[in-house]
Image 1: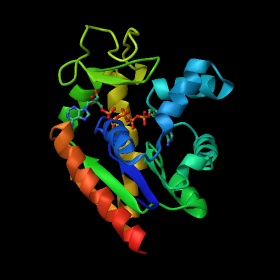
Image 2: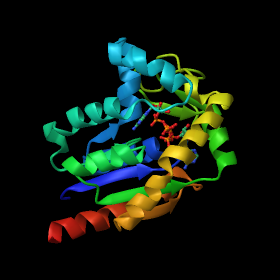
Image 3: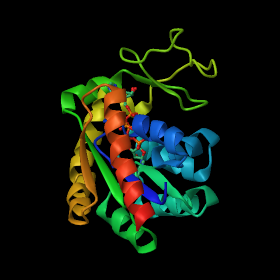
Image 4: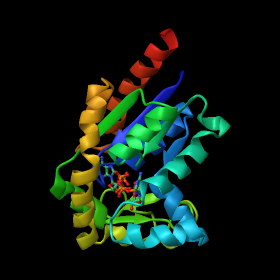
Length: 220
Ligand code: AP5
């Protein structure tokens, strides 16, 4: 597939990370998650990570210039030459416009899920601090309680998955990120997907969308 440059849009918990990981495995496109990159920096205790931690823990956005630096560094790597899957970026109009100056997105996938479903998804999410595998206590529990299936590490709840922080994240999403839906609609690359269905059903719809975009690019 030629140059599928995909951005996932959607409120916290809509399944952007879940779907981007599956798509990455299917098409061999790199999954670029700014949230994962920041959490990795926090884990390693880098200066950038230490600064980002407090912001992330309260559900705010990390400053645009920090994020733009992270994404620019990542996208120059050779694995991104064929295309990429952006998860969690861009998140503000400033980020989207800055990104468009050095590259552009040809497929924006907006995943919609009702807010009450999202709260349940987030407060019951557990993640592996070592390999970043993700679980849900009800929909996708680990085989052994509290332990990662893949690497045996004790699972944790993300600081920003506490219910009070989840509500702030929704607020920040509405104010700062939702306007991007109109931004990509105007560019005629927006696709809406109902994310309130099981993971595989959502995935097969997203695969069809990305395949159609890839075919268009292959022809063009
Ligand atoms: P980030 O990590 O990007 O968090 P987010 O956007 O809030 O998204 P989530 O990871 O919470 O949810 P998701 O949509 O990926 O859903 P998931 O697949 O995990 O960002 C974290 C923080 O970093 C931000 O708050 C900010 O501070 C900072 N940051 C990152 N990027 C930034 C940027 N560009 N600018 C500024 N700051 C930035 O699924 C959620 C749960 O639901 C899981 O348990 C999963 O198993 C379950 N699930 C998924 N799909 C389904 C389904 N279909 N049915 C049932 N359960 C499902």
